[in-house]
Amino acid sequence: MRREIYQEVEIPESVEVSIDGTSVSVKGSEGEQVRKFILGEVEIGMKDGKIRLGSHKATKKEKKIINTVVAHLDNMLKGVQEKFEYQLKICSSHFPMTAEVKGNEAIIKNFLGEKTPRKSKILPGVEVEIKGDIIIVKSSSKELAGQVAANFETATRIRGRDLRVFQDGIYITSKSGREI
Image (tube, rainbow, N blue to C red; front, side, top):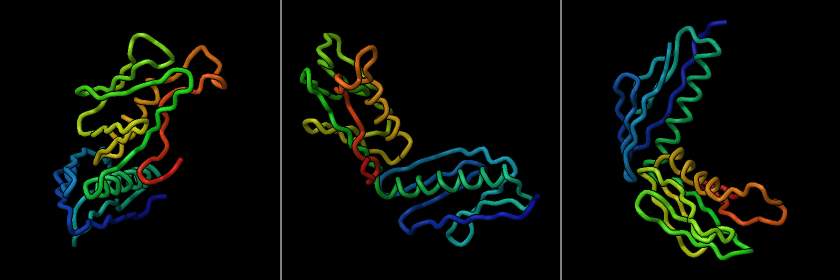
């Protein structure tokens, strides 16, 4: 059944938003993000300080697109005001593990006593800070910050050993203000 569906996203005063076709640019105190959306039959525009998304004859498909784009826009607006922060903890019981940042990658040394260091990619636009056994990942993009945190976890994944005994690794302890 087709019906009219519209949603609005409030733009905070400290944020500038510009829309060019299907591309949305958001600029704030913590940075700038540009994202191109695949909208299909969904219209996007600005009206009275709000971003308006919708369709006159929307089906389930258009409703899904609208809800997804609204969620992405909310994350973009939050990220340019205050950066998203992920915290990770270095856990090592068998061998003391160290991590350091060199350029656009993090080097994890002495993981399970291995001689060759493991490497984790750091994406552009992400800040990584290591304080002892705590790693802090910050970015104005929630997706980039989450991906870099996931890269740390996958770099220290243990294969071929009993996971009940070998619990060493780097694990996410909090994501954007939410404890895990």
